[in-house]
Each structure stands twice: as C-alpha cells, then as structure tokens.
Image 1 (cartoon, rainbow, N blue to C red):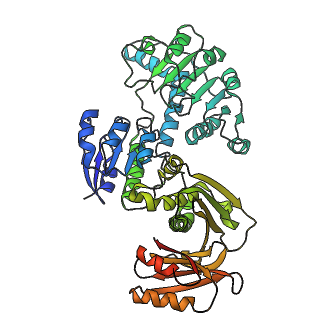
Image 2 (image 1 turned 90 degrees about the horizontal axis):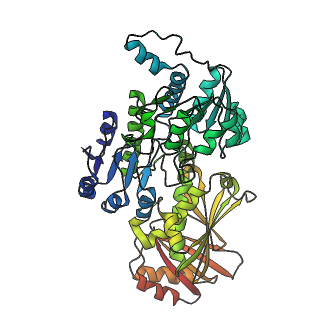
Image 3 (image 1 turned 180 degrees about the vertical axis):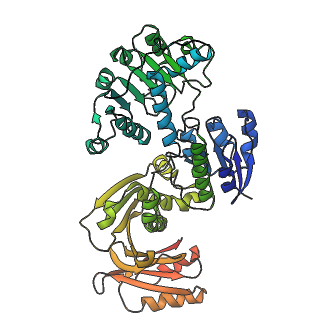
Amino acid sequence: MTKVLVSDPIDQAGIDILSQVAHVDVRTGLSEEELLGAITDYDALMVRSGTRVTAAVIDAAPHLKIIGRAGVGVDNVDVTAATRRGVLVVNSPEGNTIAAAEHALAMMLALTRNIPQAHASTMAGRWDRKRYLGNELYKKNLGVVGLGKIGAHVARIAQALGMVVLAHDPFISNARAQKLQVRLVELDALFEEADYITLHIPRTNETVNLVGDRLLQRMKPTARLINCARGGVVDETALADALCNNTIAGAAIDVYASEPLPAGSPLRSIRGNLILTPHLGASTAEAQASVAIDVAEQIRDVLLGLPARSAVNIPGLSPDLMEKLRAHLSLAEHLGHCISQLAGGNVQELEVRMQGELAAQPSQPLVTASLKGLLSSALGERINYVNAGLEARSRGIKVLEVKDEASRDYSGGSLQLICRSSSGLHQLTGAVFAGDELRITSVDSFPISVPPSNHMLFTRHRDMPGIIGRLGSLLGRHNVNIASMQVGRRIMRGDAVMVLSVDDPIPETLLDDITSIEGIREAHAVSL
C-alpha cells in the first residue's frame, strides 16, 4: 500500500486528505539519523520547517515520489538532489500569504507605537505615557523589497493606511507596478527614501546578508526595518550595531539566520528599539489549515498520477492553464516517445516547434513533456516531468524551442518534433482535435491523420501497387492483427509513409522480413 510519512506537525485536515489514498504515519521530532532509517519504505514525505530533507535522506528513499513542504519556502529541502532523483518537490506558495503580510504589518504598527515596551512597563506598574511617544504611519514612505504576493498585499494594506509605497523588485514590470500603484526604485534609493522598510524576498546566494552595513548606513536615522521573510537576508551583527549606535530608529525581526535564535545572538542584547518574535509569520490557525490542505491535495494528486499545481522543480502552471494544456501535454509526450523509437540511433538534438495558436502558450511545459516521452524508452519509470530536462542535459541532447505563430494548419495549433540522431533526422507533427482527440498529422513531412495507439508500425516505402497487400499478408502469417492503416504521400508513385495500428507488439525479428518486401526501405515498430 502507498505510504506517506508526515515528519512535522500539520493540521489534521491535511492528514485526512492523505488518508484517502495512502497509509499515513505521523512521526514528528525525528533526528536525521532516525529519518534516514524511517524513510526507506515511503512514497511521499510531508514536512514543515522543522525537518531537514537532505540529499542523504532523499537517496535513502528509493520509492519516494514527492516531498511536500507545508509552507512557502523550501530552504530545508535539497531541491537539486530531489530533482536529480526525479522526486517532485511541492509547496504552498499562497497558503500563508495573508498571515505573513498581516504579521509584517502588525510588527510595523507595534514598532512605531512601542507596544511591547509599553505593555511590559504597564504590567510592571508604571504609567509611562510620555516615554512611549510614537509615530504615525499616515503619509510615511514604505519601502517594500520584493513585490510578490505577500509584498503586494502589504503594499495594498499600507496604501489603505495612507502610506506612500515604493518598491524594489527586478522581476516586476512597470505595468505591474502601475497596477499596484507603487513606485519602482533601485535598492539604494529605497533604503535612502523609506521611513519603514519591509523585506519580502527569499534567501538565495544573492540575498544572503543583503541588508548589511552598507544599506543600513543609507537608512534615515528615523527609519525602521521589518523582516518577516527569510532569515539570513539581514546581517544580524550589522543590524545590532546599527540599533546600538542609533543609526536607525528600530527593527522588528521574525526570522533568523539560525533558528531557534541562539542564546549568544547579538540581537538578544538590544533593548528598547527592537522587537523579536519566534518565526510567527505563518502561525495562524487559518494559514496552518490552508497550507496543510493545499500540500496534502497535491501529494494525493501525484500519488494518483495527476499533476501537482505548485511544484518548485518543474515549470509551474496555474490549475486553469494546466487544464487548458492537458491534452497538448499528452500529445507532446506521445510524440516524444514515438519519435525516439523512429530515430533509432543516439539522439543528438530535439527541436520542439509550437505552431499556430499553440505558440501563444508557455513553451517549457510542452518541451518538458516532449523530453519525458523522448527519454521514456531508455529510462522507463525513472524519467518524469521533474528530471526530464536534467536527464537530457546530462546526455548532451541539445534542445531547441521554436514558436511559429504564422503556421495556421489546425485550429488550436500544432506541435512538431524534429529529432536528429546518429541515424538521421525524423519529424513528427500532431494536433489536438475536438473532444481532446490526439492525432499524428504528419510523419517526416508526409501528411497523415492517425491517433496514437499502444502498438504501431511505421514504414517508409515507394508508392507502388501491391505493397500494402504484401505487408498485410506477412503480418497475417505472423498472427499480427491490423486495427487501422493510413498512407501518406506527396506525389503519385514517389516516396510514401504507412502507419499501421496493430493489436500486439511487432516482434523485432519481423522488421527484417518487412524491409525485405520490395519497395519498403524502413520499418519501425513503436509501442506507446
């Protein structure tokens, strides 16, 4: 039976969903050594931020198909190792958007009105109204670093509070910024102009200690910094110095380079102008239920053979777009599988051409599906949508993507694969017809119209009388039943192709007898 290991606490709603399709074991607090021993028999692993899914853990799980992280970040998962092994990694990129944004706003309000300090003072019996004079957010400049879903939500709420929002995000277009009514600026300018700065960026090689001495020195002495994004993007020693020296007015931090925050952290020594919380950004009942349900549904779907909607190591597609492209993804995989068997020799290059209306769709998922089909003959179940591109690169297969909107041969567009191998060049074109019917529409530029089937025979022959009859007789003598047959030609009595759908696989030994028929130059048995 399919088995799922849940190694961090998650909402019961997620466990209930997983239980629909698998046996679920909840074993939290495992050490890495204990996890290495436990993971061997599981098909899926669901974690939060507590479990570190290392390359060693992934390598110890021969049956592992998917790792689900109930949250946004996947810092605790070795995505490269998972991709190399063909293991899907999914997360919940939107499940805690509201919770994280609201925590950043709460930290900003608490910081500007001295709420934690005032609370502690009042609880101690004092009445320090004059001491805790605050500042208003109204008409102040808020600098948002990272304008993704969380950053954009913070910007919208801040605007409702009357703040002026400027933002830095190199991957946001001017049109998107205008829609959000924010002003895009360079990072240095943002730190110089903003009265409040909130970070909403991932931790990457480029962002580690991004906010250090240089940027902190550019801030106004009255400015305040909020980080509820990822630990490590702020240099904590530099921040502690800036707070001690009154370089900036204050900071509110929810995430740290090392968690839990070490006892010796310089941030623990700061008094008065610093608020620290223990990574509470996603800690709402609503968010925990949302991310658990989101990731559990994706694990369930993958175990049932369906696509995941938020995979981090394959090209992402929205559910609506995935549904729209579903038939074309199937077509791409069938064409790739078919052309690999037609190619015969070592594949050197695959050109994927999206034609007509299909050229307007995202190309990478179609390329990935084509590569999965291309490599499936050689790698079987080892190849999937996750590792197809990596496997192709490791094999030195050159992959070309071409979009040709001018080609208008079929409504909805067509997909053409051109495969160059050591034995020559082959082309296959296909299209999706009404009712999501898949059709191969040309073979090596010869027009044809056949649906892909489990077992097929492709021939290249001279267009002459008697060939079809002789081939049919030969197959009949070997008890091969023909389900359908189509011939494609460009000119009378010239070259032609023939595609037969048969009930059973064509024995390899029969191909020599087929090519011995006068006029037949090539014969390829294809099983899908």
